[in-house]
Image (cartoon, rainbow, N blue to C red; front, side, top):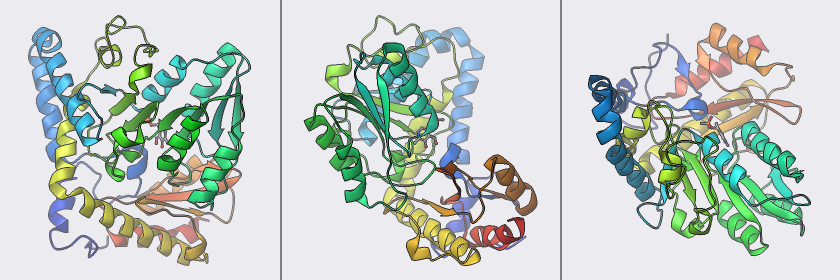
Length: 388
Ligand SMILES: Cc1ncc(COP(=O)(O)O)c(C=O)c1O
């Protein structure tokens, strides 16, 4: 096994890496983007909450959970620049937030829901389900893999028609690791009378977020990806005008409560990831969000360049956006089931990466976080040719 060091971070890198000791030793975990990873200190905080829950479930669920969740919702709201304290609900994951938004927006027969072809599958399916229920249509606009910000904005806005009622826009796309210019798109779509749901699953922690100035209609972002919260928890925002119409797709104790309690108060589930989420945010703040972001992006760029060299691709021609610590490279051969390739990379190389399929292309996506080191990307780059 290679001895690891990381000049992109600095002298204290091995101390930081040691905090992520829940990860399988010797395996290069280059897929932070899919499910996130929390450091030991945050997992300990979650374990303390779980111990309180198990010590006396009645006291915990009846008297401690409510105040704990209120504190956690407020911590997320503050971190995300939400305008008032009680404007963010913590929900199970980004999918839950996007689904609640799409199930609640006013939509009828003759309306269109606009998506891009980079949209995360389950968010697209949530749009399809709602559209089918009311006789509306889903319109998917193509955005080239290498489109620049102006091209992305133009592609989306050109697709708006008088029928367009709702648009679902990813802030950072999953399969293609692109950053969409939501700061331009949200107001431009709203000016055209379109309700905007921002699928910001990757955005918290990865990018500076200021919900007060972005002011989308609905917004959902995971805290367990780039904010170091335990799996799983997402922050969900609804603009004040939508809060009274918003419904939780699962009927529960928040049914007759106001937002955010409408979404936060659900039946008996393990909420310890949500309760420990302020600890994840505090961990990111202690490391220094700017330092983390700069490091992660540099390392992801390094990984993309190493893969490009291994696959004889021009790194300058590959997609990548400022601030996004995930990078893709297209593989020279398409795979019917990319999960087989993902498993083979894991088994043969001891590397975990993401292998999304997008518009007929099989992509290899690497993420970078503070526990990763350049040699881990070299290992993938050296091994990938033999696998292909
Ligand atoms: C853009 C996007 N939307 C939604 C999701 C779904 O996240 P979750 O499974 O946590 O709900 C993801 C997950 O990676 C994503 O990248």
